[in-house]
Length: 366
Ligand code: V47
Ligand code: SF4
Image (cartoon, rainbow, N blue to C red):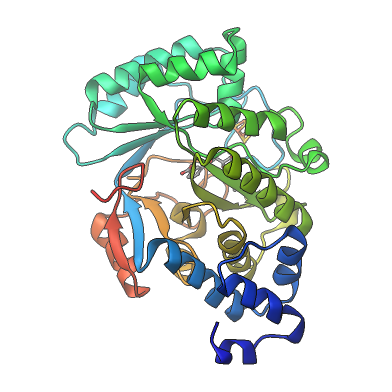
């Protein structure tokens, strides 16, 4: 670490700056000190150092679209603006034919990934989704299927009466190659009891990912922050992820998801300021020393904050989306119809001083 950096560093965190600069791991207690006491600019410099060790001057994006088969869900998470009861006028449940029709539109479009996520639908079990994946693969053979949060998987596999291992093996055989990171929320049991009591437990979420990694399926991890949790809960969440990654090495990217407050039971909480988003991104990049990538998901942050995130350790901004997801617009994100052209993504990255690289779902350059 340069002397100049040490000069602007409060005395009590200088040893931490030296540790991070030397590439050493910080403890949860040290992370808390850093989160509470380091100036924002210092966090940016430290996180950028860690990011550049891992991916140099490159920042990744991909060409993707989403399929959201339903917004009907057996659970009632307090932060969710997406779920609707089955009889609500704005609920949807697409048939297999409709899903196939959506996928077919992307034939020969250049997309490399389809991200499938929805509610835990009480009507369908794993066998139905196995069929869905096979049909999509048949019309989009070169496109990677990244499908279902650990919570949806736990639900559909349980409903089919299979073990996690059998269920995930079947989905892999049907053509599912990787899993998104949703459903993690905050692992702390007391917070989970308050915001999503019916969902799979933290241990179960980790077990689904552990099992996927054992089967050779890489996955992502998320953290929903900015509601009723404290900094300590966030660090505990990161610590549980870092431990699992030490064990399996199967995570590709970590994605902090900012709680958006429109149209859900926690609306009265409002939203945390952008400075908190940047501190959370930077701290995640520094703490998760064994995660190769940190994603700033642009439909949730908006394009301007996403660009700022690149100065706080993010090396991925997700994809073109093509206006195919509703989860964030229903919760009040700025982009009502999320879509970005390849050129707009490249320009956003270039303007932040980085080199845009189109990637596939496994972070290989396309
Ligand atoms: O688990 C729900 C979150 C997640 C709100 O792996 C909310 O590449 C904010 O997992 N405010 C699903 N967030 C989305 C997800 C995801 C997104 C982008 C990329 C990847 C990836 C995964 O959305 C849920 C929940 O944590 N969510 N409601 C809300 N009001
Ligand atoms: Fe259902 Fe997911 Fe919404 Fe929870 S966050 S109610 S599991 S759709």
